[in-house]
Amino acid sequence: MNESHDLELLLSSHFPIVVIESQEETRVLQLLSGIGQRRFKSVNSWSVTDGMRRIDIDIPSSEEGAKPEEMLWQLRRDRHAGIYVLCDFHPYLDEPLHIRLLKDIALSHQQSGISLVLLSHKITIPPELRPFTASAEISLPDQVALEKIVLETTQQYQQRSRQSVRSDEATFKLLVSNLSGLTRDDATRLARNAIFDDGAITESDLPTVMKAKHALLSGEGVLSYEFDTARFGEVGGLRKLKSWLEPRRAIFHSEVDDKRLDPPKGVLLLGVQGGGKSLAAKAVAGSWNVPLLRLDFAAIHDTFHGETERKMRESLKMAEAMAPCVLWIDEIEKGISTQDHDGGTSKRVLGSLLTWMAEKQSSVFIVATANEIDQLPPELVRKGRFDEIFFVDLPSAEVRRDIFEIHLKKREIEAERFDTGMLAAQSEGFSGAEIEQAIVSALYATHANQSELGTGDILEELIQTRPLSLVMQERIDALREWALERTVPSD
Image: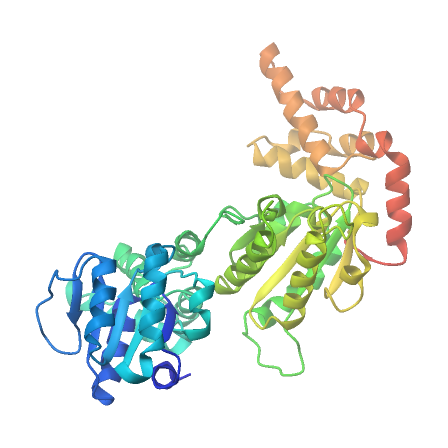
């Protein structure tokens, strides 16, 4: 897109006010200055600190008209043709006098030749001004521009240090890809941080870059960045899920160019609480070496009309800006109930999610988890929404043995000292979370007794525990029966 050309068309149209929401004030002013020179129009910018000044030619700024009201009265009275950029004017758009003055200037646009540009990070236009207003978008740098930014940053490092930047082609491309969705200034800053830190571009730089990127893009805390992601080696079982994901990794990262293969969209994980669904979501991101974003439905819901839907749209937009990434929607059924208890808000949120899932082009892989089957709307679980629906059941004896060994090693305890076969047999019906808790409880007991942890200590905790599969046996049996013909076993 030639944004300079599109912006010039807007300024030459019948809209006297153009709105630009952008953080790149310097770049927008440069674009407008070039347009003014081509159209033989003066280009002026106003801010509450500098007042009005010419930006297309080098003239010192004047504090005259620094107050919004004075500046607008002057424009309305003098009617000097030109482009007038009002920087960060958004706080003054709730003042009736300012609105009326802007409307007067807009009404006299044909006679005065004044074009107003409202430039800020976010602007809400009052209803009185909307008929006179058009919006212009300033595009973010594409992959070619981002690659140029990283190359220029490496050259700057080499000129300063007289040393070459250490990297390889794959990691270089990953860094460029991870900078997508940022402004030029922010992309340059993060690339500089990664390169100037140690004179290298390595995989260890990528999580730090993505965490900083999330901090720059995050708005209201609806999407959280999960910095620590697991590897599948830390997850017991889930063999079929692992084998399903492995061949799709290269397609997701565009490492294989095969037009016949559609990029993977996502999976829905159903199953028993504590069975490892959340850990599996983390493991997908960890094994694919991409950031993990967690969508918090509790933070999305808002009492004000329309705010919930807005937060949902902004969250999905941010996920696209963070691509390639994994979007983890935990307990999805809690946020998209189709009941009417909330005035239809959940239905509209579901509609926004389904539309986005159907139309998205970015590399955002969805991992949604759910516990309550009866609360999932049919529109979500029908074929085509997700690539596959997996059922995460309680672990088998073999998987339970693996889980015991994983959690013992995680705590730097030699698993070889334990009869994990006996522990696996005794823990039938236990989830992975319940097995971990048995080890934790046994560790506390032996710490209190000042004794060394042994197989008997863990067995004692298992005997005293009533697992969820026993306490809620009827519900779990019903869940298994529902999943039998409708899902793929994860193990």
